[in-house]
Length: 170
Image 1 (spheres, rainbow, N blue to C red):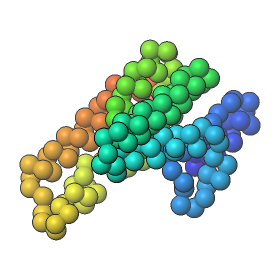
Image 2: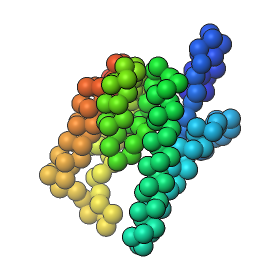
Image 3: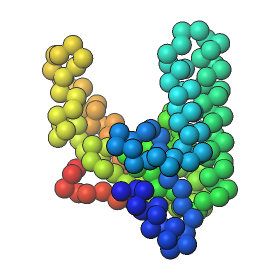
Image 4: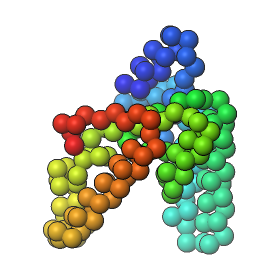
């Protein structure tokens, strides 16, 4: 879907780059450019922060991940006017709205596309009904999950110029 959108924009003479954070299972992103590869490298380093028990390694991986993501964000702010984020993604996994605030500071347009489970209450997805040990979640735990989704959607609505969502999926 997004590869087609990029091709259509480019056919109209609009420079566009698709940045994917993971390989697509069906190989739709075979032409992933350097920006996607650099962002994926940053994600891999971020994952190593949580895998390592050595504090020095954690600090190094955290610094490398921050450098990768920060340099991508800076480069994109300098070259692009419009940013389209899908499924609750952003440049920063730790502080997702920090990059939205930065983009707004530089007067960049933000479009967020919700695809379903990123804005749908967890009880409609049947996700979160069971804990890892197989026990059912409590009403309080379910309310906490709903609050997380509600807060994320409210923050996106606050900063995004356009929000695209199918109301029937929420």
